[in-house]
Image 1 (cartoon, rainbow, N blue to C red):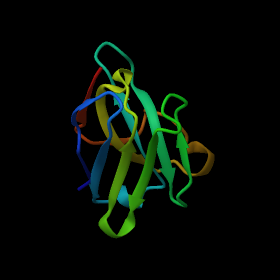
Image 2 (tube, rainbow, N blue to C red):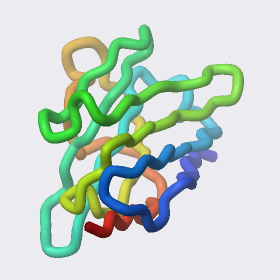
Image 3 (cartoon, rainbow, N blue to C red):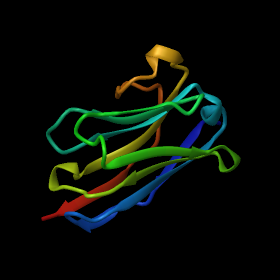
Length: 124
């Protein structure tokens, strides 16, 4: 059974940090592309970061230099370290995975598998 379970969200003040975690099970962790996307109320889904099978990473312009995506293969866990958070980062954050390989593992929000999300609220 494919499953992605996020944790680590919560309230934080602007300038603060959070680390999101995503525990993967089933086939998800062996998929070629894993990432995070977010959605704020009234807004479209926005890709945030991706990491491919080889560990190459890509980031949305809005988070580059502040967020870091990583994974621990031994724990089948994906992470998103978020630093210098801004109010515009407030959203529900979702972990996602799919069989996108190579050039198709780019910033996107249309993954085939996703979790239930974890809420991040940044107050200014």
